[in-house]
Image (cartoon, rainbow over all chains, first blue to last red; front, side, top):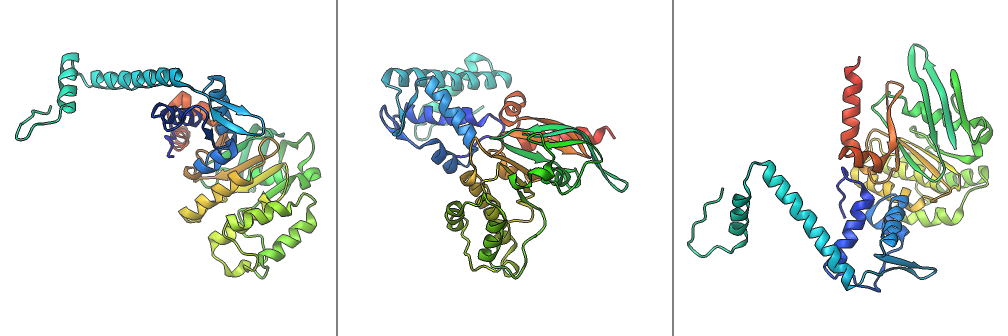
Length: 128
Length: 234
């Protein structure tokens, strides 16, 4: 995993786990690497990983069982909630960036539609 | 804990450190960043008890660093191992000197760093020698680990191996590691605390994650900013 070094790394670790849960690649009960293993896999300070794991425990995303390891504890309800939150964040960011380029909302809508709809053969689309 | 109180050090006309105040606590990995000649190695040598401050105090757990030498594992910038030594001979030598030598850790890190005990110090590459030096300090259970320019002149892949070994060898909670370098890239995600030093003065210090949060910048970018501003003042 490559980190964006201009953002706190522990938050990126949490986001990475959230994405895995949202995509259902990690499900409730799945075991995740120990803090030490994870630190070595992603080449990050073990204390930074510890901070990320501690926060995930506080959010009830994961739970650590003594002597057994750390497991995903987020269920379907939490998965949906996280998906909503992350999608909203991405959308807000997109809208903010587009507006800062000076696009009106109607224009943003039109452009989005244009990007999302598969082009029909021979059809010309005016890209702005 | 390592404490610097108003520490100044000159070498002839050159001011290496100018009224430096700082602390390093146990259980952290700290990066000391700065250009060549900023004073990084001087800080390391003062902690290791090899140099003494002209003014001010350096204390290690409240004592003079000289009295606490056995609690420091120091990787100097220079090649300090005899060229005719094999790695095994170097390890034997160090293990008789220091009671905190951890033979299991040594044997674990040896293959991890792709090293062999028969390697002769004077006949291996610079990168391999850098890894040997690292192995010999990581194999000690010393509470303070000083790595002075562990990456300088080392190729990218070897730098990554070194960073990996530091994480693997790090004793969380009980060990403080201090790394001085001007090559931040490899260790952006390794350090928790940072000290930016230039011309013998601390220009900025703090918690790495906090600095990223506040400035939306990487440590490399912050360093450029700090030192550009530093130069403008002159």
